[in-house]
Amino acid sequence: MCLLPDGFARKEKCILGIVWQKPLKKWPESTMSKKPTVLVITYYFPPSGGAGVQRVLKTVKYLPELGWKPIVLTVTETADFPARDPSLLSEIPPEVEVHRTPIFEPYQWYRKWTGRAPNTPIDIVTNTDQKGRSFSENISQWIRATFFIPDARRLWQWPAVKKGMEILRSRPVDVLFSTAPPYTCHLIARSLKQKTKLPWVADFRDSWVGWLSTPKRWFLPHWVDFRLEKSVLHQADRLISVSQGVQLDLLSRHPEVPISKWTIIPNGFDEEDFQGLQPKTSSQFILTYAGSLYGKRNPMALVQAVESLLAIYPEWSSFFRLRFIGRIDPQYLEALTRLGSIFEYIPYVPHRTCLEYLCESTGLILIIDQASANASILTGKIYEYLAVQKPILALAPEGEASRLIRALGAGTVVSPKDSSQIQSLLREWVEKWKKGKALPSVSKEKISQFDRKNLTQHMVHIFNALLKEKIHGKAN
Image (cartoon, rainbow, N blue to C red; front, side, top):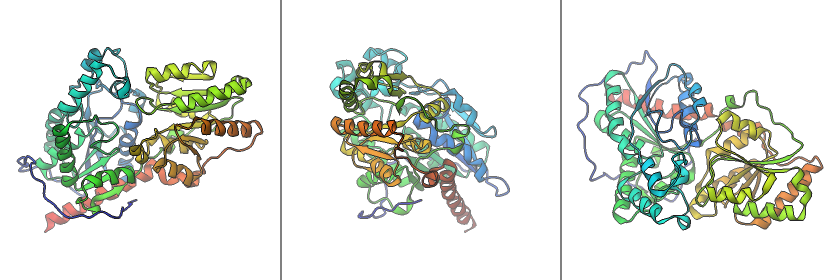
């Protein structure tokens, strides 16, 4: 699955300023009599929860079935993950080796300095909208942007490279695979490639420099970040992105990177996660949002629309429910709580439990804020929404997410800041629901292409191609 964007001038170009590291003289040879092996470098891995872990977990889950042996290099189970879901540990195949290394993260210091509670999810702490930041939060953001490049997991690179070399010296590995963010994972893989000359695949779940989740940097740290991004794009043998928008954003800064390196493999859903779950009907009209809310991703237009509807139709309070599951910035939680009994807040729950809530909903809410950069967002959550086959109310700008939902007929797209349009759509949906009429939904046939096992097969094609190139190179 490869989308080739047009209109980019490209030329091969060498990279200056990259520190060369002495390669290994010898390392264990791969043999074709056994499964080829890939070293997977990831920060997010169970017991980490949330959206960031699903892509790599499902890849590791299905690689053995598809002929590859994954070895995972990750952080200790006590790392400062934004969310924790120990139930996901059961999805790791028993034959998969998982190597965990210590990591220093500055977030507890960050919480103390900014006056946040010790258990505040770190994505909420670091993504507060700039207008709402205190002086201490602004200072902390400046420190983070200036000294932690490319991200706050930067200090994990050294223990991870050390452990990675121990692994590579002790057993045959054929391919390196890193997934980001955090982008430190790519720097770890880059170091291991420089030392071993093994082929390397870099997976981008988000873009990098200047992306939504990265802090704003002044000139010098921005330049350093740019150089790191450039070195990764040039030194990786293959590049994967979750969407065309991510790919185009990276190419806009580095048009010289050959398009032949790129493959687009979107996020998806795991059919096995839905075994035993059936769409349910309820006597209540339940709209569910699953995920985090912070920064500019906010529900205020939705809140205003619901408040207006309740004022016009007070009887709605007997059947209309707005359910939010996940981590919510306190300012948004306060606004939602004002809706009274129709609002239900469920803090982060295990993945399976979240899917159960989605299945019993009448409709699902997707929120992407109105900003130019957001047009490229195509979150993993969308695909699990699709798998539930419930209508999606997408509060989203024109972009990849809105195009996908419209193309599949999976729901309705509304401007995220247009409360009157949201109000009209909710009124229309409720009237149809009362009359027993069908709301928009997607068929299984249309979404089978997004099954995680099928998507992992695309990664296997890339790994196999690199393995053939490696063997052919040795033969010559």
